[in-house]
Length: 134
Image 1 (cartoon, rainbow, N blue to C red):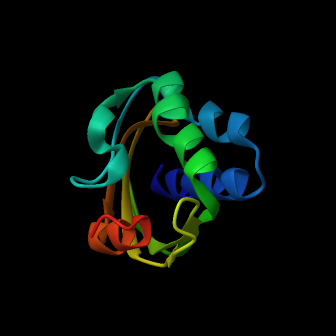
Image 2 (cartoon, helix red, strand yellow):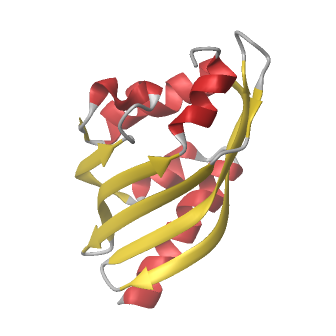
């Protein structure tokens, strides 16, 4: 099942890059637990439970507060029911115009063909600098 899990996670990134949020959400369990990295600006809602919470608490904020925000996945690590993605974020904070390009890692946990848990890890200092808060 692990090859299928990597394919599913790759599909999420592809869907988000194409602007197809509905397809990305379709890969998530209705009870998904989503955690942003400690000290990331959207960690204030941790844990986000369910796709609607993620849409409002994370995705909508990314779209409204950043210009050109996107994830650049570089490596997909197959760990069975867990897929680890290593890459970078890119985008500019609207309020300052400052760009960021920090390292990031995403840990996806899957069960029965759906994402049941997500954990973000990111260089939060680089994000805070772009936001003008560090």
